[in-house]
Image 1 (cartoon, rainbow, N blue to C red):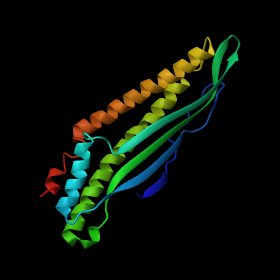
Image 2 (cartoon, rainbow, N blue to C red):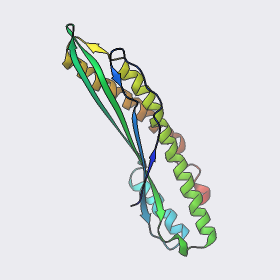
Image 3 (spheres, one colour):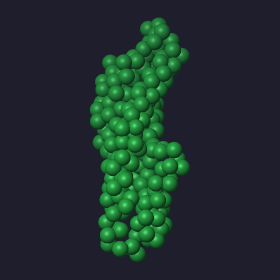
Length: 188
């Protein structure tokens, strides 16, 4: 499996009164999985089977990490520092022995791979848009009567935003049939 690491600049930094806030750290990695096939048809079928076997599961994964610090202050507990990290991994097929295929089959493969990459990159855009939403939501949780409530409020907020972002990811996949809506013309 080959990895490509890409730097992505953070979208936004939201100021929290009294809190030290770093820009979100966004880590994007593109990995590949091998496809070994003697023909375009066999390569295409492997990619489609993989998606079918996974129930149409996404080839882009996202993981949110929220580290925060809080302290008691004047009878309350207040957020004074936090860091948001978003790890994104995109997984794309790599036809290992494509060089043996005809020029026409290699072109069809590139068209397929470009289509899959474009689809997965829309998932990245949705996640990046979610980073902005996450920042605003966390910034709104400034203090609570005690530190247990603050910690619970931060975790609940994070999970609520992650659920909304996941809902947008799923809606996108439903609209595009997991990126396969336009692929039927390639399967000939």
